[in-house]
Length: 255
Image (cartoon, rainbow, N blue to C red; front, side):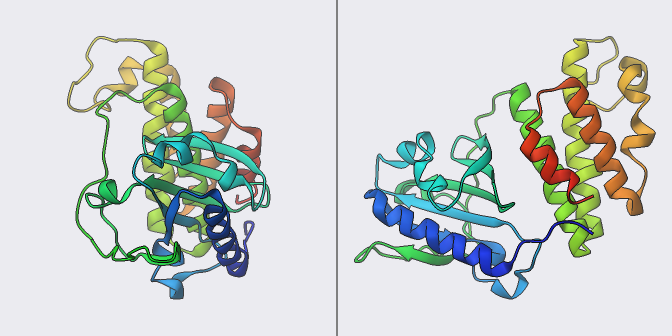
């Protein structure tokens, strides 16, 4: 079930990105993470590209503003800036990537676990072994576009993990994380309602938002039915929000 991506393609894409960064003139290093980092033994046909770009001081914003370097190896069909420092993106050939860009000073406060230096500028220190710190957050309320992007990419990642056999993680991504974003979107669309709980948005949800609550049995069909849940959530999002056709196609290809 599902569309698979060759591990060789993922590694080749990462190398191509390193070459692109080298040509850009102001990058210092490319660090692969997770299954394309130091855990290459986990790399399989359902892996993603997770990586950090290290840029010269004062140059990180340039790499986040202009994604030419990212699109040089292959065309991008979807981009979503999910954090102040990074994106989730989908290439035309189905490769899905999540990345962030930091300067050396910024990277000092960011957790770096299972990292592998894929490319670095000659003479640049590659002592990027820190495993402590916390990713920066803005504390701002997410926009609708951000919530939609999180929901869709959670569906994509969840289904990729389901295809790999990681059913517990898939369940959480689809019937947990993605669902939470959909419920929040619906609540924001309905506007303030009586009985809302400041500390638990799901309290009295059925009474406060009956229209979307009527779909909960479709959104939560159970542990063994994650693809069916993803189908219901995607269909609901397409009806009520602006959804990238390319990303929707990639999600459906995994069902």
